[in-house]
Length: 125
Image (tube, rainbow, N blue to C red; front, side, top):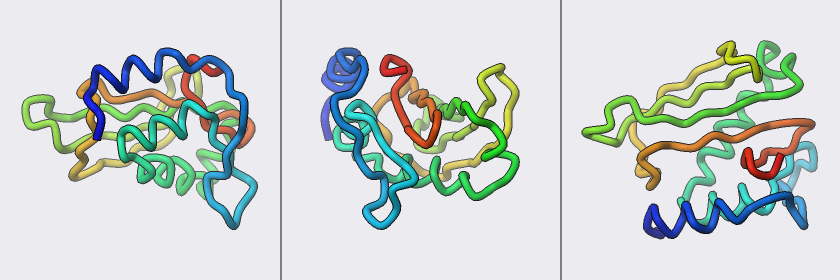
């Protein structure tokens, strides 16, 4: 796994996307941008993509056309349990999921946007 500094450096250069990637090979409903694919590879966090898209079967989530997904650590001292939340873009929480253990390498967590079935970094919006 890459260092947090290397990951941050690589992700800050992601603006827009040149290609969309299938999140799941058997389903073309959900797409990733270059930046999210890079994040998942560098952070070994394809589980995070799966978590976000697994919530798309819940009406309370799918009723939100624009979603803000935030992964943050609950106890920064321990740094192994986290909270994944979905907001509606106006800071209203729509869903939450506790993650008992994660080795996600960025201690500040990460924020992702989901719009029109495309998962992206905020800098790619």
